[in-house]
Length: 149
Image (cartoon, rainbow, N blue to C red; front, side, top):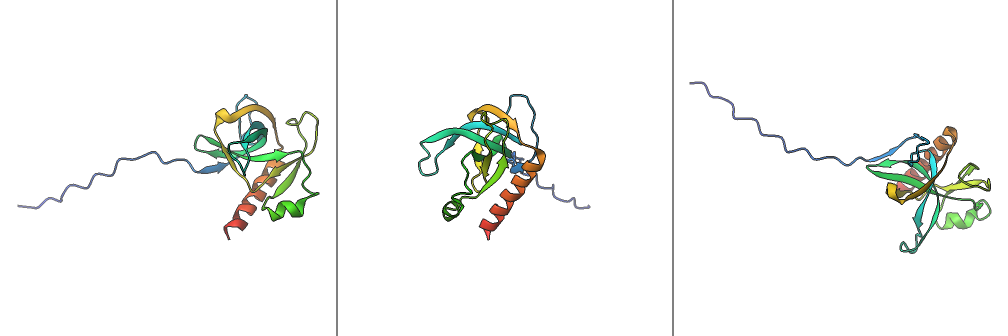
């Protein structure tokens, strides 16, 4: 009598795999925060996360249901670049846009990626130009890679 092979083991039940970080440019003027847009959100202070400030952030991507964003400022950090570098902060000029009602030039912080719930976003500002977005995300990746070494 021929022998039959034992039954194949059952695969383990599949579990949803959380989505990893995804950088993309996808602005849509729909009232929802999208990558490529400057929006306003509560940003906790680094030295005291229980405190913070409502400020503009550039949404650069998504991680699961959360937004990845970089803090922005209208302060010119070219003047204090050495001091900022001493503290490990890296800023990049992005110009001006509809996110600042006074039209001031802005800078984006490349070394601090915020993970925000959509509910943390208070209002939509404006989209950055695709070329600016690409420059920012390339510079952000460079900073990240340099810190991994």
